[in-house]
Image (cartoon, rainbow, N blue to C red):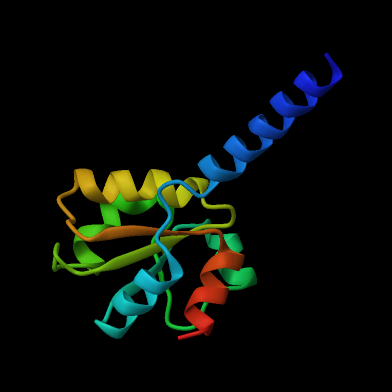
Length: 121
């Protein structure tokens, strides 16, 4: 009985960790896209962006994507690498950009992960 509970607990933890990164672009693919001129898009709030942001990141807050995307990113085939603080909002933002017709949208995930990837080009 004790081993069963332990195995189930380990399986749940592994599943959570795998699902957490589901939908995020790999560092290698992100580097390739950056070399091809991808835009890094920060979808965090204005306050979060002002507190810290990645160099050259384009700021389009999640709740303003519908109103700002078309004016700030004219080419709907432009490669977009999105990030937020934890990766959840950037996942939502990926769907929003897709609904607006953007065809090459990828989720970098959290700010920390994005900083590691963008900083290690």
